[in-house]
Image (cartoon, rainbow, N blue to C red):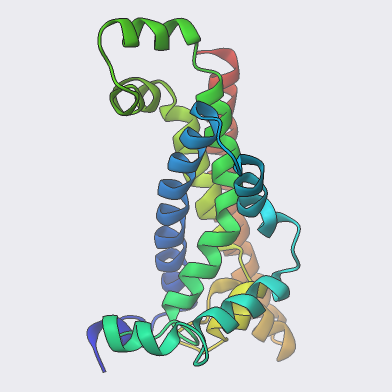
Length: 228
């Protein structure tokens, strides 16, 4: 077995949740920034379809999303190619959990970052173009620095959404202790085993982390709205 497949062996639900949420949040943030820039700055055929596709996971039942991910990355899909080419599995392994969490987190990141980009003054953009900035330079040197609070808030929301992901992750990655069992799944297992003390402890831990990060997001959003 390679290093990537062994990476999550023996991990606690907390450590595995943080690892998966960090990677999923980072992927969602990168994709969300690029998609938000594309949707705000350009008009093109299929724009509404692309936006709808990225927001689809907000309305789809998690089991439906997980099912199609299972089909896509299973033995009749891309699974064998990925395993032979890159040396790791997606189905019933932590990379599958990362993919599921990233897809479910993307709409929150995209919406938050898009609002921040849309609020950038056209006068600032016009001044940058007069100074000779290309669209790519405008993105890197003007839009990203101005919208950093919205980007940070979007990243935190993506991390939080990934941290609480359950249904789609269960379908594609399973609930394997030490390998794919996240905090949300550990809580589910504890309730199923009638171990309410463990369930309460894990739930309190998850709620505490979520509340702390949500408080930070709300503070950032207040600064964005207030222009401070």
